[in-house]
Amino acid sequence: MKVLVTGGAGFIGSGFVRFLLERRPDAEVVTLDKLTYAGRLENLEPLGDEPRHRFVRGDVTDARVVGELASACDAVVHLAAESHVDRSLRDARPFVRTNVVGTGTVLEAVRALGGRRLLHVSTDEVYGSLPLEGDAPGGGGAPFDEDSPLRPTSPYATSKAAGDELVRAWCAAYGLDAVVARPSNTLGPRQYPEKAVPLFATNAIEGGTLPLYGDGLHVRDWLHVEDLCEALLALLERGRAGEAYNIGAGNPRSNLELARGILRALGRGEESIERVPDRPGHDRRYAMDMSKIEKELNWQPARSAWPDALERTVRWYVEHPEWWRPLREGAGPSA
Image 1 (cartoon, one colour):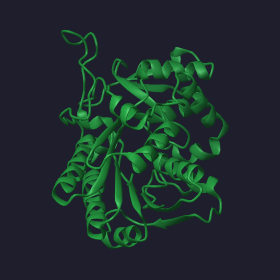
Image 2 (image 1 turned 135 degrees about the vertical axis):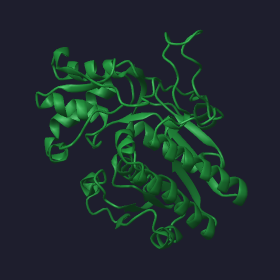
Image 3 (image 1 turned 120 degrees about the horizontal axis):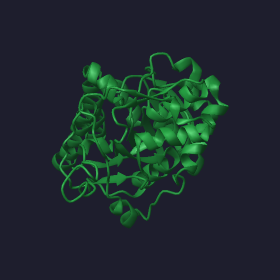
Image 4 (image 1 turned 180 degrees about the vertical axis):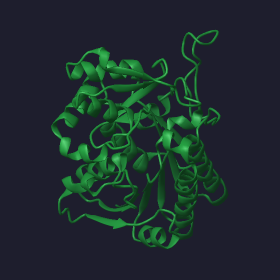
């Protein structure tokens, strides 16, 4: 199997490239990445001079480049995306370009070539928000399953939902062999420090404060990146064409709990938490039903146990300041 991975120098993308090459000794990978601010060749350095890996710097909206690379591969894993909600609120245009136009470019390349499988990696944020348990009559609402309507509330999530719908349409109209993955919030090494876990961790390591939006009660499900990579490989190899699959860990934690857990791991007190004004349209709670991937692919998370997954992640940032210190300028709160 030879796989094209778009966005393969980012946090999840580089993790998947490394995971695939480790788990499938006969696999080859071509990584396509534009190397914008969050894509870094350093994320691929653990591969060394691996002969089964080739890196190409390029734009996922470039039809010629995507078509040429896909033509030499058996499958495409589409991870290239703008993914930071705060940035999308400041300027949505890059999100439309990469997440919508880029996805359309990948779909057209796969359709034109035929005989290729596509795994499109989306997000749980496409479903929109659930209320907290105490905020709605009868509780906080049932978790989203794969048939729940898509009701995104940020420019980022809307651009990802548009990509999901493009994939669904290309499957229906052209019989494309494509699968959609919808993972929950992901943590682990090499995550750009504008995201909540590395931002909080690196701030705390340097003796700074942890900027917490609003009341800090917004709930997210936290999945370790290695579990996500394992699930993505299972979907690439065994997922049903035309289907979407939720991927989560069953670790619902408020942002306040997350901040406290990071501070405990570093031996710091809660006085380091800094309350900041909430962002517009901040989704209150995400929760997904993962029974589909569990039943069909016999997949369950094995590395996301709480608080071990968080503590291991924090430890990585403690031990690798050379990776994150050059990236911290301009980082802000996010979750």
